[in-house]
Image (cartoon, rainbow, N blue to C red; front, side, top):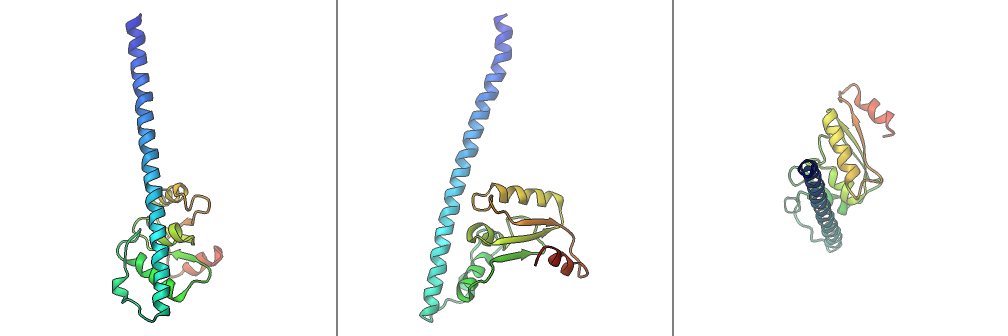
Length: 167
């Protein structure tokens, strides 16, 4: 009798223990990610102000020297930060017509670290689902995630898509 109870309880206890460990690891990973995002935001805001100061002093760096990647594939995140620090912004709405994933997109940094609204058009159900989950789990976008639309874009439908969504 005791042997059969042990046989039942042992896997249950092991499962509870494993769940507790993996949940702890997930929470720790999430906290580290949140700290990293906060540091990135602070560094980017400092860089933004530095560019504004450099503009006032008329000693700007060359565009080839300002690139960095937070989410983009190459240096677009840094270049966009640089350009917007110089020219300013109006409505802070970004549109990405061939959005595939938050990673590799040049709009994700604007949405996650700069508070921009986003309208992202994606052609894949799987990528839409992944991206929605990403933005809903990100501490800076979960309350106001970007609109992600699954649509194939053509020259014939792009104006209607934008108009129908208030752009």
